[in-house]
Length: 150
Ligand SMILES: CC(C)(COP(=O)(O)OP(=O)(O)OC[C@H]1O[C@@H](n2cnc3c(N)ncnc32)[C@H](O)[C@@H]1OP(=O)(O)O)[C@@H](O)C(=O)NCCC(=O)NCCS
Image 1 (cartoon, rainbow, N blue to C red):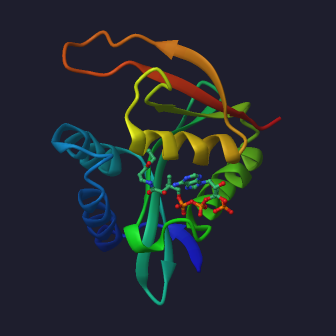
Image 2 (cartoon, rainbow, N blue to C red; image 1 turned 180 degrees about the horizontal axis):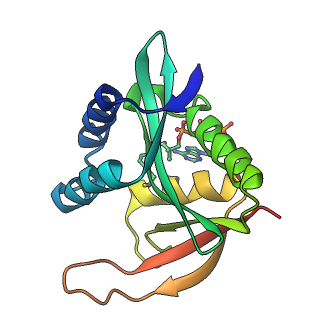
């Protein structure tokens, strides 16, 4: 398996994976994701030219922001997500950033699929640092998880 920056075609393949992960990404989420893919960086995990997973990111104010990630359903729990995060950790070190931040649903929201998501982030060294109340009608409260780099 190889991690590399996404080509235009890879972006389409990554969106196809995201669309199939319906428990995590709804219509509004997919719309934001498509724009974020266009405006920011996207890396993908590939094997024999097949996209297995993706991660989109950007830097801001000395930190790395992990925006979206996903691994193909039948390929989950095989280390692809960890490889993508490990790549981002290396890149953050190279850029001398303070941390990686990611937002996700809080434990207070008892929606099972995101329990798995949080387990993944906690297992990969992220810690809960902030609770953000939704400020827009229809949006969910979020927590900020942080993985320190330096
Ligand atoms: C979360 C996600 C990206 C993780 O990728 P992955 O390739 O499945 O994860 P890995 O195999 O690298 O897992 C690394 C460790 O995280 C933990 N973990 C991952 N998935 C887990 C799950 N479903 N339940 C519990 N722990 C989990 C485990 O400790 C795992 O190590 P182990 O399998 O040796 O026990 C992937 O499962 C996914 O696409 N989920 C749906 C979309 C999503 O939640 N995206 C993130 C929000 S934007």
